[in-house]
Image (spheres, rainbow, N blue to C red):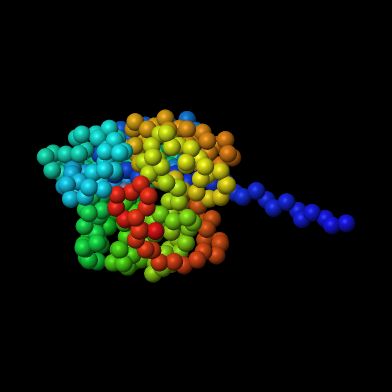
Length: 296
Ligand SMILES: [Zn+2]
């Protein structure tokens, strides 16, 4: 008689929450809102903070140059998500500091059991000018941001998440010279070793709510979770900690229902060291729902 093979164990279900804070409003209003949402679900997230000036208003100039960006701003209701003041920072209004202006709140994130990592000094400058910048500019940008991080947190960051998931060869070369436990700089289906750095890259594999199409498309994110596995959801403090906070709660509820355990990104990175990860270079591509290309 043929015996059935033993059933394979169910795939592990782990969800990482990568919360990016890109703007002053995201820090001031979005972070406290997310902290209460996460507390309600007893979930720990990894916050990637922008420390330096909020130059979001400079995006207005990009809008004029890029119809695709303008379309994205309108389709996703950017003024509702990010606020009118944010649209003027760095142009008509002086660029205010983001996380650096809130050292107590930075530490409070950690006190509540979450992780704080380094996302940016000047987010817009990276996003808009990185492809034209050499190693010196990149090193100065990182050093200013890391100094601000240490000033607020009292210890160095473990990880870097590139603004707008944008990398260049020069940036990868410079990043390799810093002490990171892992990077989270790309959009890709699964973790890998980033060629030229020897570092674990924990990519965001799920679409963010904005890319998925907004609150009516929470189902798309839940559908991507249904087969199980290790996933990282990109979250924006301005958005999921703002007018779309109910949808964020729906995602957390859905994930819990499917048996997901929410893990900090450092836990995910650490568990990966033990596995054979492929080494891969990044390449730049345009993803669905995004206005500009990013590292994949
Ligand atoms: Zn960002």
